[in-house]
Length: 168
Image (tube, rainbow, N blue to C red; front, side, top):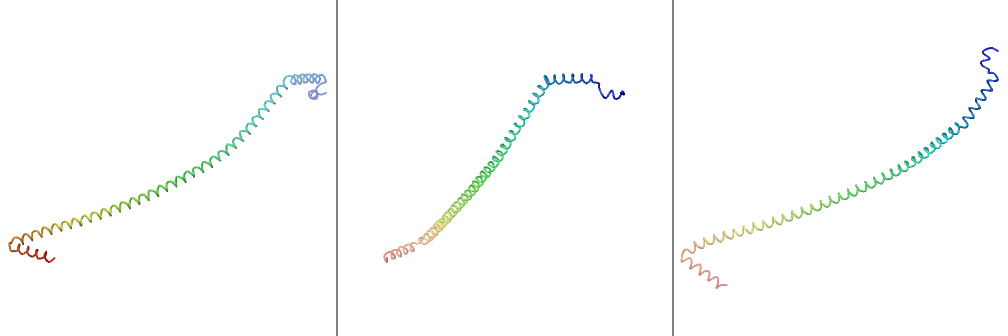
């Protein structure tokens, strides 16, 4: 055989020793390495399954939390709208109450002002009448003094007055 052919095809003895070495290697691996490797693979598989289960659980919890969040947001919005509506109603009522109160106060002030004006008017009329009366008395007094300054006129006045009394 040629050199190249002898390198490619091994001899029978070499094949036996290779099979014995391979058998020992398989035995050592089967005895010591395979249980550790299979145990490690089983542990890794269990860990991955646990992680997947945990991820699914977290995903479900997240979905539940998302639903709860959406519900709470909707409830919060509804409460906010209700509070704003109530506040708006209260504000409008307070505005209307204040408007009515202001109108009532304005009406009362106008009425008081009218009464005060009428009072002052009546007071001015009375003052004018009193002044006219005082002026009339002063004028009458001056006229009477002037008329009564003469004795004849005094006697004539008394006689006229007595005639007026007797006729009644």
